Image (spheres, rainbow, N blue to C red):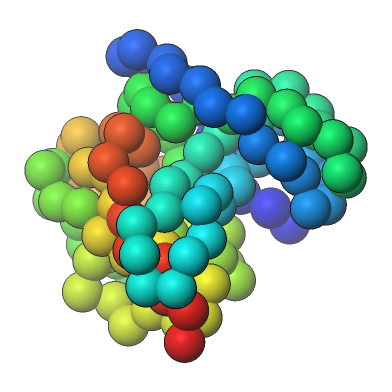
Amino acid sequence: MAMTAKFRRGEIRTAKYLAGADIAVNQVVVMGLTDALKCRIGVAMNAIANGATGIVAISGVWELPKVSGAVIKAGEAVNYDVSAFEIDDNQATSAAGDVKQFGCAVADAGDGVTIIDVDISEPGIYDAA
């Protein structure tokens, strides 16, 4: 199941996104995949059919699913675990396809907490391993 997001607050800037698969509204997508360079996490503002171009949010604070055992402090950059569709702490070992060190947690989220508010405005690093 893909990661879905819920808008919490802030300014929403948008970008066009060419879908390589069907994308549901509020689904998290990884944008700008380039080998070990900056990329972004975006949130689909509407459903986007495979091969179509749609609009995704590239800023704002979004409530996102979090790895239950991760301990994240407000102000930390976070990782996106693409295989689990969850946010993880920035000390977690990343795997191919993950986005490292993106955004900013806007509240503490300790062990056992399964959601976290993240400002997605800052790009991260794509793990091309």
